[in-house]
Image 1: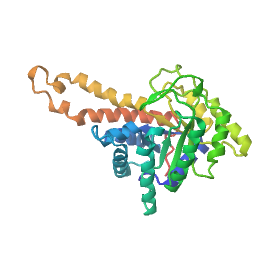
Image 2 (image 1 turned 45 degrees about the horizontal axis):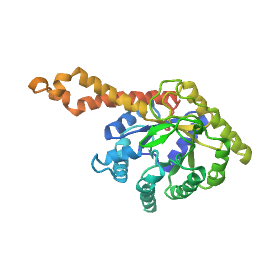
Image 3 (image 1 turned 120 degrees about the vertical axis):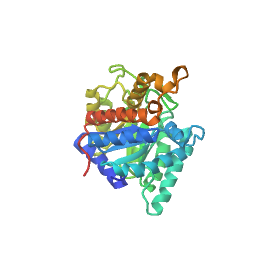
Image 4 (image 1 turned 90 degrees about the vertical axis):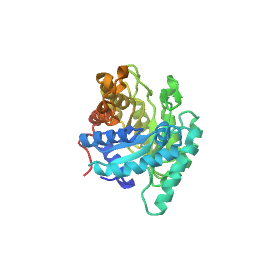
Length: 340
């Protein structure tokens, strides 16, 4: 199937919310990890979201080029061609973009999509994230309001973050403290400034103890009830049931019960990065360890070309990551839910 149109993406998210599941949003950094994500979604019979971060976009442009827009455009165009061979709907998204990178990442990408739409084409990406977690709420929402207008003109969806995610991702660092929990007041102010769909479609990443990085289950102290409190507060004020479409960030170390509770309160998208990185890398390390002499030409020998051919371990990495994407779709209940 082709990359999701704005209408298909909106329908995907609506189905997730009404039917009680969420889509895995898989971070990728290369053509190989893109194929791993697409393969995983296809094997799970789940539609899904594939995304690139600022660092991922830089890497995709070339390690010495480091141009986020170049990497993003190349990724999106490549994805449009190869995704057509997989029997699932895929939306393309750009992940965490802090204030100091907006002018070199999200804003120019929105302008590219506006130009495409003006010519009768589809937007380059289907959604973009503004990460305002490092600035005060009022500035966060002021920037979000401006980006929402641009996003609507580009026929894309905006994702915002209200609150702070702990840990570190692509240079965005959040302390692990009480600021990790968004308040109902924050949610009410978000609805007041951005509306509830009347100014454009946006998803909201409220924080409820989320932490980026690698953690064992039980280390992260999640409070999914924060999401319920936010929904209830805004619903009571505006008379709209479950008004927000939530995004779950920093989910490593979360229990399945916490994930399902969050979905119950309106989560439709959950970012998956740390676990799929490991799932991709682990089989490659296994290949190298098992073929040590062949890969490294030990003691002046010629090695084994089949062992050090990047395709040999690349295929293993793809299979490992795809399996983790399948597991993510199963955990989020999107497996078997692909749109016809």
